[in-house]
Length: 397
Ligand code: SF4
Image 1: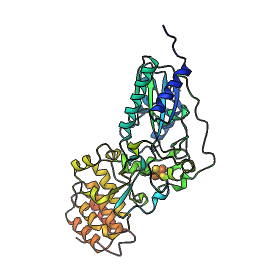
Image 2 (image 1 turned 90 degrees about the horizontal axis):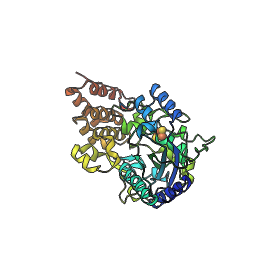
Image 3 (image 1 turned 90 degrees about the vertical axis):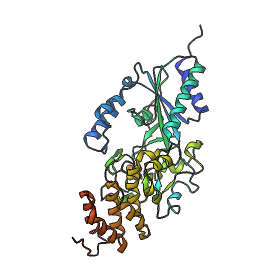
Image 4 (image 1 turned 120 degrees about the vertical axis):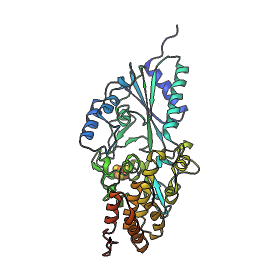
């Protein structure tokens, strides 16, 4: 009977298989509970910093920090990070200027291409299959890519793949434009040491955040973070935050754009799924407001943008149009003010009030006459009192 390869050799074999499959950063940690992360996550929940995510419960945190509960007999967790930085043609920060028109909304880079969940999960399963064939070992495993309770950033940190930036992203050897995946397995593999680097005295991301969501180093208040507000949030966007969204219609990259580590290591991904020929770098807001559910599903089939839901994306589109400063977009918002979803009507009313002008106020007054939803009525009332545009106008009736 052949001798079982040592843990060290298994790790090397795994790293070789990963590299053949284009998985750039790989680390391994043990499956002992992540008690520090559990405590931090529960504190965040208790303080209400997670926004409103009905599925994000204490029970979920507990399961996600106790790997044995996700795979009985778990011994090791393999952590991988894959670069998704797409080509902008203008450098990371350069693409902030010039490409947008008033009717386009910006999309966070991770969503310019195909849905990373499917791409990476397939790749990780392939990795384990290949590793099993070459090593001749039998083992059990479970794969996670941002789709289960696994606390991916803490795994990456403890497996030595990267360290936490003050914006809470994991900074790897290729920066933070990475997607994280994990494989829990019952295999005994040699473990890596946690990454002991830090961003030192740098605080570039904190004042750069337009909404002040980085409330302390390493602490994000999701209720203020544009990524949460435009993707996971199913409710309204608070009126005081709407102007701060700027032209972000899906996600936000600002705290990564300003990070000096990312500026030094501007490495474009080799992965065509994340760097497509026709990237979804900007969405046509007029088109979004025209979509029905079928058209929305068809347009964003296989794209992470579907996560925002049609109503969420239309709500965001109204806010971005309101921030455009261009009264030529008023007809788009007037249409939105008459759409079925009251969530969209509310944000359209706000946007019209922000833009102001005869056509906007006429549409608001007309809508006010027949609006059945009190929350929309209130938004219309407030729209007439928005500082710069109200000019003493009053609703009558
Ligand atoms: Fe702030 Fe945008 Fe970073 Fe969220 S993603 S913390 S809004 S800079």
